[in-house]
Length: 285
Image 1 (tube, rainbow, N blue to C red):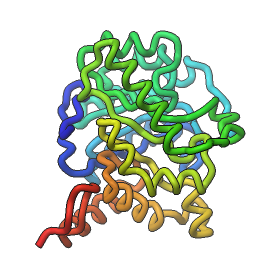
Image 2 (tube, rainbow, N blue to C red):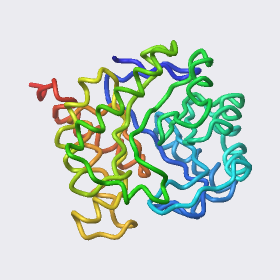
Image 3 (cartoon, one colour):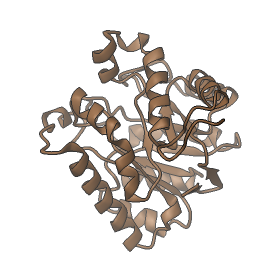
């Protein structure tokens, strides 16, 4: 599948696309508080647009391990002013939410994509997206709630169990009439998974392409990169860019990142050098 249909846009996936993260929260693990106020978040959206982001992803509730839920009203108060500004900037806008009520308002306000860490399992979420004619959908794997998910990390075979879950969720949406080209899948790096399990998912990432949907992958600044490098979260730029390139090489088509400009520069150099992008490609002559 070479196109992701997302509301106002059809996103060309013949090469990897970069999704810039906009956390309108005081407590996100990587940048909590930096863009918590509306004007800060709006400025950040514009900066990501200027840096070349293909998509911006706006979230009003932290999903870091241990994070507590916020009321729907508070999530909407954080997200809506930023969303309303972003939809006027001429690029696809994603809203990162797991709540049907927030999804409904976001779609009414012009959001192009719903990016749900719980894969549309809130009551009414499936039906809401099935009724929408064209919004893009990202279905992610996780177990439990952010507050407790790192207590749910026992897998017999992490790839098989993640793939089975994503296959079931995508099949459910297809059965409800959602067009195939609206759906992408996210293995949920860091969500109810240990560092070694995250690495296993990466090493076998190309196997998930057999599910028949594009992959969205987010390694940016995550704790596994800290485990590998020994670096604190604010010193993981190089590791994050390396992980994004590796994900693209293994077939990911949307890279969800904090550091848009650095990731785009790395992709440009990688491709100019004729290096492979995707498991079925070879270096250019």
